[in-house]
Amino acid sequence: MKDLEHGESGATAVEYGLLVALIAAVIIATVIVFGGKVTGLFESVCNASGAFSC
Image (cartoon, rainbow, N blue to C red):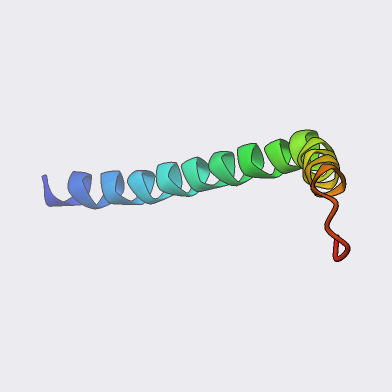
């Protein structure tokens, strides 16, 4: 029984690793997709406010 428990802990570590990789991929994809849109939004707000240091 104890050998079976050790095998499961290794699988759990792999599952956590895959989960972290998936979360990182989602964050990277979100930044790529929405990065330009957010920059454009900040630029339009800055230009509309009339600030000189944009």
